[in-house]
Length: 111
Image (cartoon, rainbow, N blue to C red; front, side, top):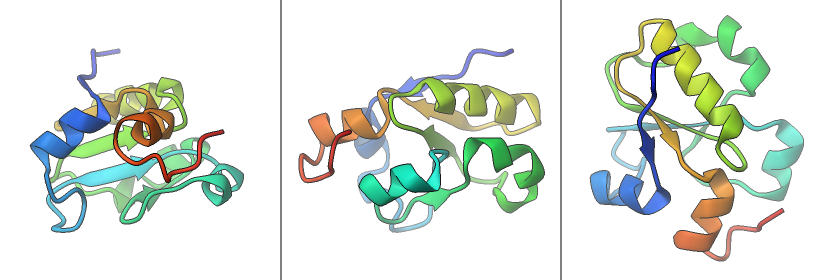
């Protein structure tokens, strides 16, 4: 597998200050639906990790894709999978939604 670059939540917002609002980047959350009920971000694409192989065609190849999960492990594997399937501009969100809550927005519930 190829090495996937990682971005902290702060680095994500430095790179894309408007987040996902202007459509320049896809923030892909690969957590399960039950996890989304506990904690989620607006403007994020949701495709559970195990559904990614069958839903690749839904993801744009002409925009950066930043993959996130709870703590960064699952998203790293998905980011590696995307890179191995021809996606060129893929990042892992280091620390996942848990880091987002700690670094960016403490109103996002931690679990």
